[in-house]
Length: 572
Ligand code: SRM
Ligand code: SF4
Image (cartoon, rainbow, N blue to C red; front, side):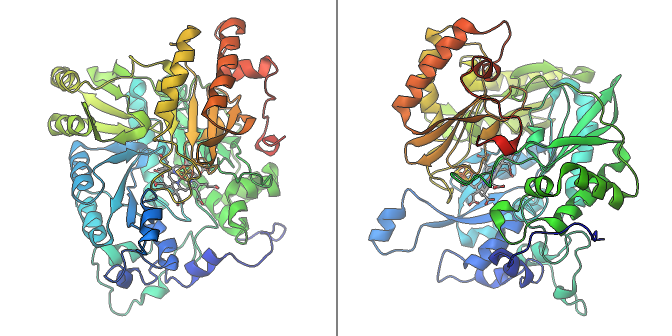
């Protein structure tokens, strides 16, 4: 039901709207073009649709110039992202992904900032069997990308494992319920036959409609006191409210997102704002109706202004809340108090309920590979072979080996020792709180290095950290290769967003618990300047901070940077 008063922005629909409209519910000509052996790539229109199937066509950017010189087509390959609500995977699923990465991918797995695996480097001819093998282990890649609801996040909190399992069920249910209903995925990849008499174009998407959403839509559930999911960076932010060990329901926040465009003040990161509370049984209805508001009023003309955060800011928070309640037919309760203490992971072994153990393993920037002298991928495979619990992928790109019995703990610990796996304790707390997006060489939007560079930069920052006695001081540091914000840089106490090769904008002043955005401190600087800025800042922090004061709060109190009180003043 579309309200008479509210309006979507005017303007001609973007090209992607046309592609979706003509796509016969996300089919396009994908089935045919994937069989075409003339090119390792696919046409742009189909690539736009491909995203809704969890994949992107990419090319290896390290090889781009050389191939251009040789007049060869780019080194096309596909990235494939699994839908894994709450980041929970069985050891069997881990083993399948591990094998597929070697067989069809580039031999590595990337644990993403939305709690799932990505594989890179899959050739077109191997896409179908890769998706089929993923399907055989009861996983899929549907809606892992595209203008739909994405992988639903949930705190994989090993301390409160019972609450986690309950909240996880909601994350999983939401993720499944909000899936597109088209059979396109099953027909393109899984050889499902089109049933005679039900022409595919007449299929109905009851919630999305034929145009799907104006842009991606993201949901996260946080379980306080941990805000590891960076709940406020989501279009729909759900905060579990727990009283006396029982889940009462969820505070509901709307309108968060991280992406922006350098130099364009009409784009900005924004944090979701809490508008009320609902009991657990209402959560699906709330999510569905919120999504329909964005479906009806989101900007379908300018994609960079199309996220729900802009819809909320344009229409006004109160108006969107009223519209939501109108669509629900009931009112949200008043939001309940909650408290977050951090947005990073805690590492190492912890004991949860029923005597079960959980080990959070530090994985630098989420890349699972066999490195020289550090056989991380092999080690996780060996653990998966004997592990009887599950793996929980975290939004900080780490992995929790969860639900381990006393007896298995000994065996797993032996493997941890044998392969030198780490809970990060030999590193600075700053490194343990670092995340970086993929960027080069696979990301087509990267302007600078990120995952391949941040660890080296931190090697140098650690010298400064040590000079100032800050080794155990938890400071969040984030890097992305462009301002799209895939490592949620707007929420780093120190953050870098790529501007050009070797050049970054530097940001300061986010809150350690993910409740305040940062602000630009220096523009377009290289390593030398980054280090000299940090040398001054960290030494001042070491000397002038108050007891227990986080770095992000300190730089504001010390007048080094102004606080960003709302995304709309991020650029001020
Ligand atoms: Fe992202 C686009 C990687 C989390 C905001 N993101 C991309 C693409 C697909 C590039 C592209 O469009 O061609 C990147 C693929 C790189 C590669 O080679 O793999 C990419 N995003 C990632 C991952 C893998 C980063 C990582 O290293 O972990 C994360 C995968 C998450 C997942 O499993 O679903 C990832 N991306 C995020 C997040 C963080 C989050 O959701 O918590 C954000 C910021 C939150 C948000 O959405 O506002 C994010 N990605 C974007 C944007 C900017 C969207 C915007 O509103 O402006 C883009 C560009 C776009 O959509 O046009 C983008
Ligand atoms: Fe690519 Fe930019 Fe996302 Fe990094 S932030 S993965 S460079 S789109």
